[in-house]
Amino acid sequence: MSSFFAKMDLKQMKNIVVFCGSSMGTDSIYEDQAYQLGKTLAESEIGLVYGGAKVGLMGAVASGALQHGGRVVGVLPYFLQTKEVAHDGLTELILVDTMHERKTKMNQLSDGVIALPGGFGTMEELFEMLTWGQLGLHHKPMGLFNINGFYDELIALVQSMVDKGFLKEINRHMLLCHNDIHKLLEQMSNYRPPAVSKWITKETT
Image (tube, rainbow, N blue to C red; front, side, top):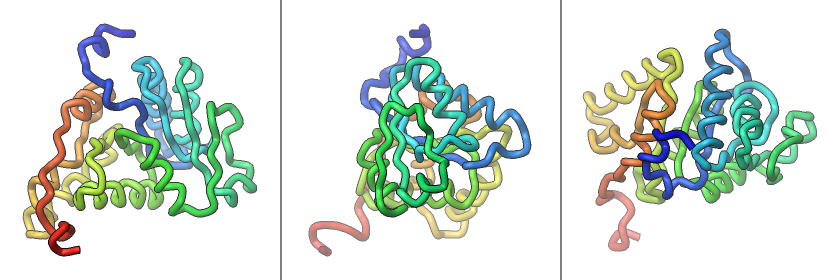
């Protein structure tokens, strides 16, 4: 294990779920950094939980972990397995009936969230986890791996939500972001969730 990880307290993050695209994107840096993320998780003895496919950045992050001795659990709906996208070298492949069950299972298996570049599916998975965190349904650190500035505009949009009164500043800070894997993991290891005091309480349910 590298000296960097020896200095970090990552014990509370035994497994991290990674949301990412089923495509490679237009620049090779996305595939390379997805692979490096998988490698880094394996070297830091953090298990990878992801969508179970062998294609795109999903396949790259899984390969990075598997080729460096990491534990990789995929969660895949049956209907996608029939399209022959399932990765056949995983530590464990969990098959579920629906996309909703997939997200629920990935949440149950993970202690933290990282989003790589991706499309609609990646955004939907990330923002559902953010919403659950905002409501106090979990207290996991959630990070954007901002490869090549991919998430710059999203971060600007989130800040605009704060500026225009649709999001509290304290909830904006739930979304961690960095373009360096090690620094992002450091942010996640030091994360403290905001106190939740609105909407869903014992008094209002």
